[in-house]
Image (cartoon, rainbow, N blue to C red; front, side, top):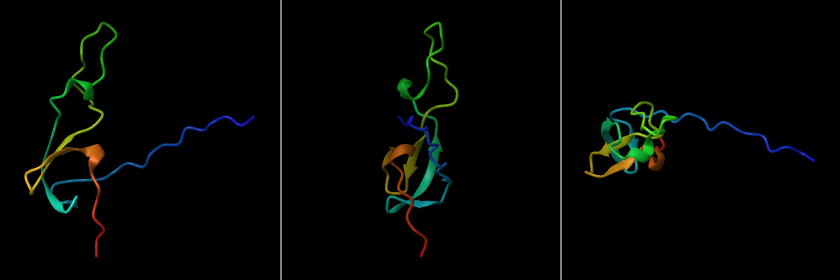
Length: 74
């Protein structure tokens, strides 16, 4: 009876120095994984507008922006 309604996820704001995952963000860079990018209609990967970004933390870990958990400000 009811149609499922698409709900937009709120944008996650992160930048250098943001405290997340018990560390600080040191570097934000484009991912090298081709699955982060969409394929063009002719089969070529479009290397623009990735679905996520790679984030380097001060602890040395590299995670995707999907795995970020922003720490609460106290």
